[in-house]
Image (cartoon, rainbow, N blue to C red):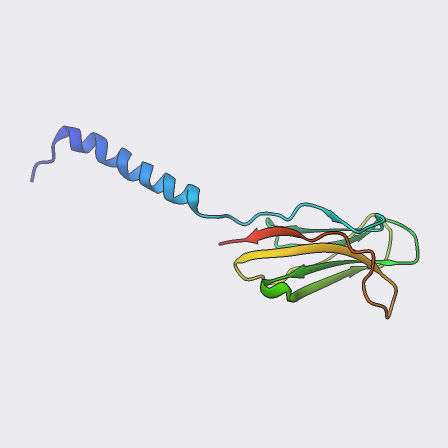
Length: 127
């Protein structure tokens, strides 16, 4: 079987172009970006590169930092707490399902509900 020279040149380009379009339209995991509590006592982030959700206590005020991740139907999936304003953050590495999630940072006193929560921010977890 003999393949024409024109087909030999254009077929790989067409296949490569189609693959590039398919990959470009597939959503990828994205970090959430930093979120902050109202009043600035806590920060949090979802890092797509290592899969960690971090909570950072950034103010010595008697509160601990809390980062919360929510899934479909605004269901709380994960809560991470950090109690020390020491320049380090506490983190967990959850297995989050593929799709859109929201994240927020709050502060809280031991035994109390989270308070001074910042707005929720959306991020996507993909394959």
